[in-house]
Amino acid sequence: MPSANPLFRSEFMALSQSGIRRCGVFSKSWVAIVGVAILAVCATPSSAQRPIEIDIGASWEHPHSNITIPAELGGLARGASTEFAPDFLNIGFSFVKNEPYEEVSLYIYRHSSAGIPVWFEQARTAIEIRDLYQGPKLAFGIEQYGWPGADGLQGQRAIYATPDSSISSSTGVALFSVNGWLVKMRASSTTRTPEQLAELMDQAFSELTPPVVSTPQAPVKAVVDCEERLKFKKAKDAKQESGASVLAALLGGIVADDVNEEDAETTEPKPVVAWCRDSTLSPMQVAYRADASLESYLIALGDSGRSVSVAPDLNAMLLAEDPEKAKKTYSITVITDDRRINFVPQNRLPSPKRVFEVLQENRVIGSVSTWGDNRSININSDAL
Image 1 (cartoon, rainbow, N blue to C red):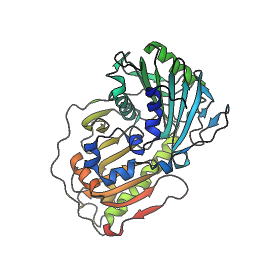
Image 2: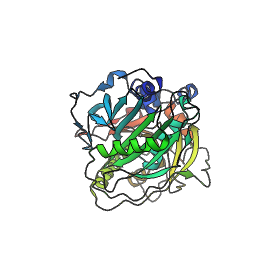
Image 3: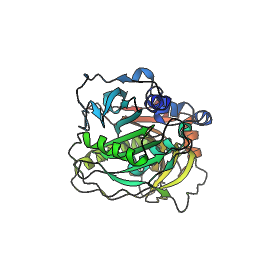
Image 4: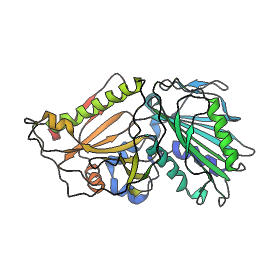
């Protein structure tokens, strides 16, 4: 991969060389606060990353999304091809041209939680906070964007002018959800105007071979700030009733995954979910709520699909000895590419601060594999 320009060297390699950066842009204070639990979830060891072997000039089909990646996109030659997680659950490709220097980066990773608007917000925030761009300026506002050449695929796109950057004139990002997979395209150029960069992205998308869309997509609603932020009372560990909380948390992971698989096969469009931004813990760690829920929220961790879900533990109530008298509890679940990691439940909706206390103490009660034929369940014996 060419290395003449520091902007484009960092565009792709910042996401491929560091597991922590792949999960998001972390400040030192963030790492200190979250501690071992989040690092274990977000960090991808360099040994787990590997190049994808593709013959020069050959196309390559992602085995799960069935998207075909050509040897060139928009006149740019394919460079680095990287597998960030095993079994191609998280992959990236870089397409580069030297003179004038420009790059298109393509990422495909599992859509394990939240919706397009949430992960698009995370993706564009990652652009806006980068020092290299010196305060990028939206050229056209946030666009609802259809995949050129593919029927029924609706996403979002943002294109920026970077007039104050010494090494870039425009940059942009677009994101779609395709049959259970998130597809993100990043593009930047040292010479193109925002309008010209939009044309490059259109051309690049039209040259990808998309899969058949099994589920029609409704228009995407952009994220807005929540009208009222959640208010929290002090939460503490919920009393566990003969291991019911452990079993409920693990069952919840299995059920949630099965529901996702069923949704991928339906021919009916899903209801449009309106996501709002409740609070920001750091630029890349943001709490979102679906349809302004007062009972649940999701914390996005970085911009590659990993998150923490906080919600009522309905399964715990069903498994209680007397469901009618059971007190409501709340689950804390970290969602990664291939598993759900469940932490000790809380007696009321915990604040993000309380959630991170539980994560920092690494109080795992169990985990469920959500990928592959071997759906393993691990239970922490101390939690029983």
